[in-house]
Length: 44
Image 1 (cartoon, rainbow, N blue to C red):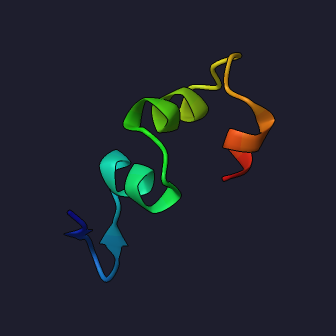
Image 2 (image 1 turned 180 degrees about the vertical axis):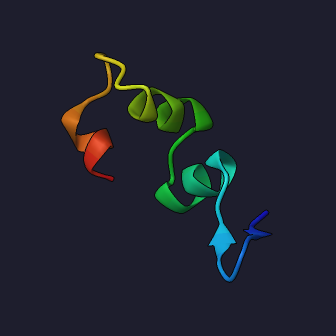
Image 3 (image 1 turned 135 degrees about the vertical axis):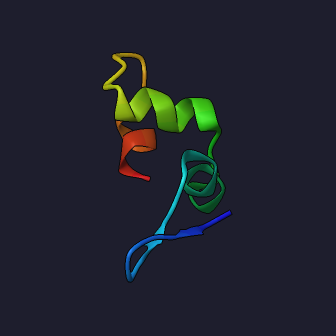
């Protein structure tokens, strides 16, 4: 669920995963610069 911040909405990792059509794990790996994430998945 999106949470209201100071004059803006803040997305959490579940929101990002849902919007990108990937898993929460994939989002976490991209954010942590995991070496096994494909360039295609990073581009999403």
